[in-house]
Image (cartoon, rainbow, N blue to C red; front, top):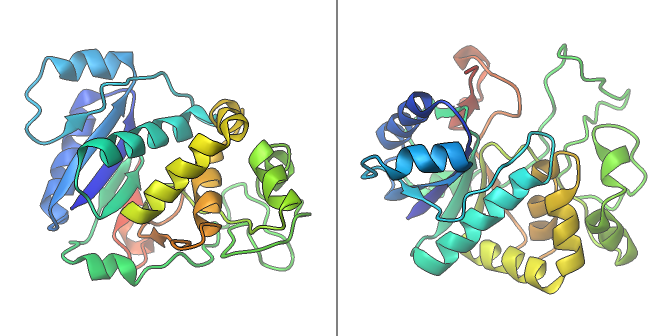
Length: 249
């Protein structure tokens, strides 16, 4: 079974449309798990919830802030404690499937590789062509993408100090195995100062933190990516081998 984790904060009807899309395209046994703010928690607590579950721990989350990662981690922990699943898929509240996903092996073929950012959208691409999305790297002195800010995080400093690997990806469409989820949660529980810094850091930790932790797990150091980046993507722009894309709301 796949757990589909979504942070939600507004537009209940749009969310129901998204859930319908997931159920239509995701043919593997699945559970949609919502991490709500108070508004969405109160709204859906009074509604029929046959198509999804609500994490009982609701929280206010902010764009460009570690609280988004906290919401993902809260759902990951809830899933580990309450659900029998094999993979954990993170989707944004604006992400939809555009292809049917019928077999878990289709996910396993999409081990995360370098994903360049789209050009022409206000993002400066370095001359070497590297947009900042890594496969795996020990280059600790990058001055593009979000790395100048990320270097201030305790997780980045821990990675550098211990000669570990950096990694990152869009969070929209990232998939972790159950074993990787267990390893990520174990790291966070044993590094409380790093964890609190991740959850409170004023930048987009969801693109870096869990991916980097996973990459350094001894036994389960791979994850998968089935999305099409952080920007809204028309169908004609989507990778034919992947499954989800982000839409305007």
